[in-house]
Image 1 (cartoon, rainbow, N blue to C red):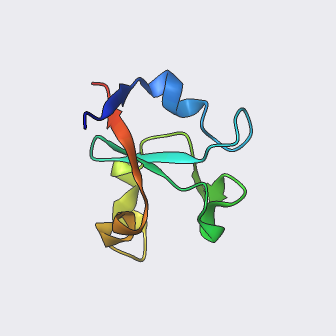
Image 2 (image 1 turned 120 degrees about the horizontal axis):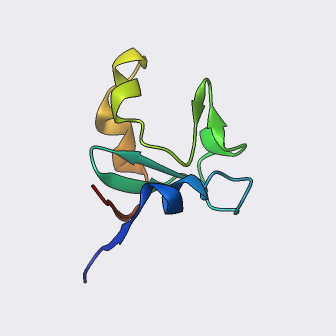
Length: 78
C-alpha cells in the first residue's frame, strides 16, 4: 500500500477547525491525532495541529515514542 504525500498547505487545513481532521507531522511523517483526547481541540498545550512539530519536540516533556500511538496518514512533501 502506498502512502500519500501532502503539502504543508494541505497539512495546515487539518487543524481541527478548517476541517475535522487533526493532523500533525514529525520528521516527514504525518500522523492523525483526531481521536486523541490530548488533541481534541486541535491544540496540545502550546502546540497547534496542522503543522510540522519536528523542531518543537525538543521542548516537550516526552520523547518521539508518543507518535507510535497515532495512525500514519502520509508523508510531508519537501
